Length: 306
Image (tube, rainbow, N blue to C red; front, side):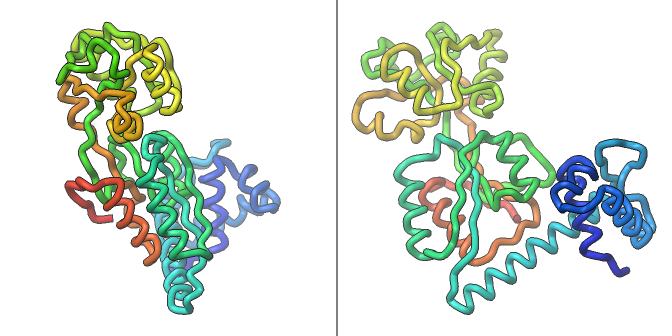
């Protein structure tokens, strides 16, 4: 079977953009040309690739198979280009990663500094985002890999490494609960809370723990900024719930205290280094992944086949 790469690209962009018209605007061609090329691709494959009669693009199972083939080829070309660059000592290219705000800190900064020193001609893009959006970026190949909390299972996303990171009640050291070894979910929910929004996995797990105890979370402050949540705790306005490493500087300086929460779900939280299934990495990306694993996930428990 001979498949035309240009036609597959038209199918891919139509699926990614959601419609043939949007893909036509992106590719600067007429929508009728997109439709004609997809029809010819269906003739080449001998099977429908999209569900016809819809305004939006919805792929058939065969269409998904063709898209998977196209993306695998793109990844292989990227790998080859990177290997050729490595061999020619150009060490150029690009790296795009997604990471949760809670990982911003000295360990990440030092890792990126070392990587940029070693690969000075590589352009680096770091997207700070929540785990839900991270999954979308990975599925659409907009980032090479991501580091996030306890993602919802997806058949096309795999965890290369994981590390257990319990969620802790974070409060000022002057708080009446700060000297306790642990607090119950009931005690936590009785306090003013500053928490992440409900689209963040950390918040979803806190809500689940509360629901399992017959309680409801009603934070006095909701934010997508960990820095702001830490500020609320420092000002003794609220308790927040985060992994200890998200406020490591404040804990080390004695400004904040981290107290364990007696909720099994919050003690079994994992941080994952995520990639799209079958995504192959060139040498420089594999090196960055390994350094992040060692510095950000030092207690990595297991690896999955990418």
